[in-house]
Image (cartoon, rainbow, N blue to C red):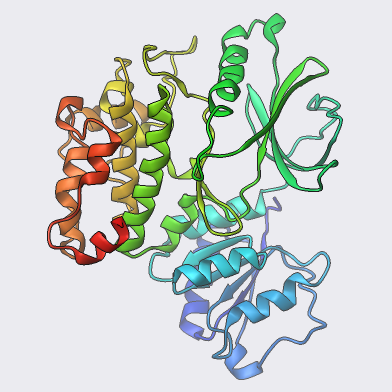
Length: 408
């Protein structure tokens, strides 16, 4: 990313343009920020190419009209810079913006300095961190045309590809190290991921297309979910009925996993994705294990999972079963309802301690009817939680007729 990012701000409100500019220059004092007043100047001409800018911040409405029409105009121009749409957080608008090619979507009501800067850093640095595929040792994957790298770690890399025989998009997860490199545990876990998930056929569980070995690399091909993750929708904000519905859909997928003896063990918003048709799908079972297996700690002492969403027993390397997934789902449900995580801390270990000892926070009054369910999902002792997904799905907020409709 350039040390002096160039940001172009479009919004009807002069005060809001000034506020966004302030956030940007607080993070990057040397940033070049230009703003455009669509109310005074009207619609940008079709000849506007975005040249000389690294990111466009596009506020809704634009000139009193739907800003997504502007987005459509921009995305038709080759080489146009990434566009971050800032709107009212309405679900249809979020989906339309992402389908229309927005790099990200932000809700004005939920926008703060840290969230804006996080998004801009991701968008500005998105291509800088991608290694050269040849240097990364990408195997020759016959039948798949690489389009871009989505993520990478010391163990595996994830690529967006086109399956040449069908023309459909597919995500390839490629294991970097094979057993002879001394990483037998990672290799075994990688193969186990495929063997377990490939047996399942559930609308909210990712579809596995293929498994193979190429140039001493193992890979899994799975369906591509083009509408982003639940994390994005939480950031944009959602109404409680939608949060309740999403929670139940995730629970349904977990129930199918638990039925065949699998615990997910790494449930978090970035592992809940949305297909192009808007349906929810659970992904990334890299930590999935047979339910009877005990929790593990890696050779470096890192506990598998994500501390923000980790159950107390998993954080302390105790035995984990399906009730650990229910706890993680409770954290996500709280975050969907409020926009904030129930527990925060400065270090992973401090986070683990808070999950073990801190009381479950109270929900705002507007969503207080969900508190009994959240309390049971986030109970410190697994015996005090919903004991299985079926019990969770039988629960309905008292007196909440909308939730009863969402449950049906």
